[in-house]
Image 1 (cartoon, rainbow, N blue to C red):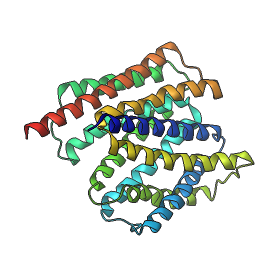
Image 2: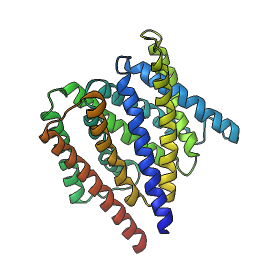
Image 3: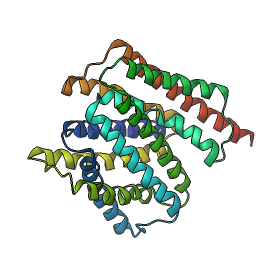
Image 4: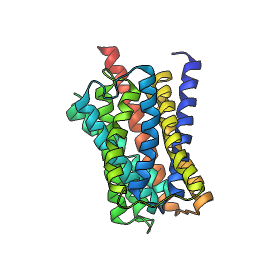
Length: 291
């Protein structure tokens, strides 16, 4: 793969990370709204955009591999709802870094559902190290009680299942067709719920709600371009740049200060997950060459 393509892949991943962080900051600014309403507003905007694109291109809205598409939709909804709920009540940097456990959970799930039965001892070490880092973030920040910590871990686990389902559909369905199933599930579920809890956004809040949907869709597209333009082991670590952005803007915009030990815990999580990603891709490449 040429250096220009690799550079483009990194650039697209950095763009996706910035856009996701911006979307999360908008959610944080709307934290007085119920969680189900935030998920609904984000999902209905994304559904219109992705559905319109699929219709324009002539793709089926319901896709092909509907079993795994439905699983993607259900667990994507659970993951987003629990993540948005943690964003409302704990520092954005902490919520972000707890969700970085999802790649570790993906590795564990892949052992049983994707034919990847072997897991090296050092990967277990990375898993334990990442979880210890998350416990440090929780332990040194009194704002993170066990409820929000548990919801963050549930969000990471649900995201891992959603990612596994996405991998199951990559040979049968268009990426946008995979994304839309998340919204096909989230809109009726959260829409029916928020009908009883609706809090009308006021003034600029409508623009923030629109921004959440738009930024998220563009970020998903940018990440897709990144994965097509560069090698995953090179570009995926740049995703964790989001934790630094979340901490910086959480401090600047919401005065969310973290203790030194909590910051050390964040660094431990990022390093453990990054090393796991790099080594996993290296082993996969060696296995392919040997085969």
